[in-house]
Amino acid sequence: MKTDNEDVLVVEDLGVSFDGFKAVDGFNFYLAKNHVHVIIGPNGAGKTTVLDLICGKTKATSGSVKFKGKELRKQQEFKIVRAGIGRKFQTPSTYENLTVFENLELSHPAGRGVFGCLTFRRTPEILERCHSVARQIGLSDKMNTEAGILSHGQKQWLEIGMLLMQDPEIIMLDEPVAGMSVRERAQTAELIRSISDHRSVIVIEHDMEFVREIADRVTVMHMGKILAEGSMDTVSKDPKVIEVYIGH
Image (cartoon, rainbow, N blue to C red; front, top):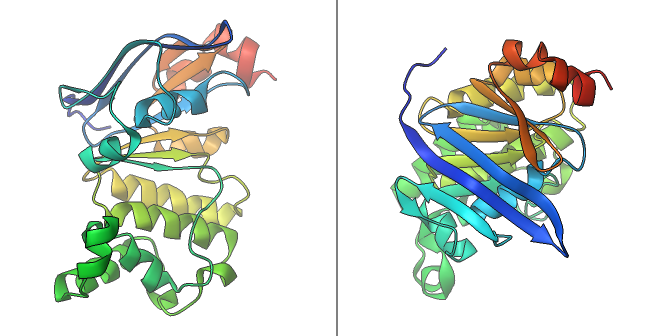
């Protein structure tokens, strides 16, 4: 278990309402440096909405989101990305007709924006970055393969690689192993653990065995609020968690 307790992300009293319905209510969340923090809970608990609020996709109606001490709550989504927070959604969004290498290359920050696209040059540094990330996500032998013909798991890894190309300090993953084989889930667990050597990771997941493999800390949500928090062993034995989630 990691012992570095420096918090890179501090979320306090976060809330959002949709037509009077409180989707997230009084949410407090502290993400430690180089830790994997998993959010679990039943469907409709507000897990994905929390990620939406952190990355700016949805604007909070109350509370605070601080990244390394800087308030993000009213920042535009693209500015939050540039600050160092990367987000992967449930469905992979790779460029299907481009190769693995081209997908990685296009994700490098040097190509951002109109000016970046016009002045982008394939430097030795960018090439090395592409190959380094490809090794980390296990796709070195697929560099010339079009993304569209990769397996479901490989597409998920490629999209994680596209995030890594941007070198964020926090990566947020929404159900990364949904639809994966047993072997792919094991490889994804290894990948997430390797990622957390140098950055913090927030994961939303339903696969409890997978959570047990990767999580340094677990937050359980129910009806927009925190139900329990702690290690996987701790929350899995909590009677409230068993009643509203694990028992079902």
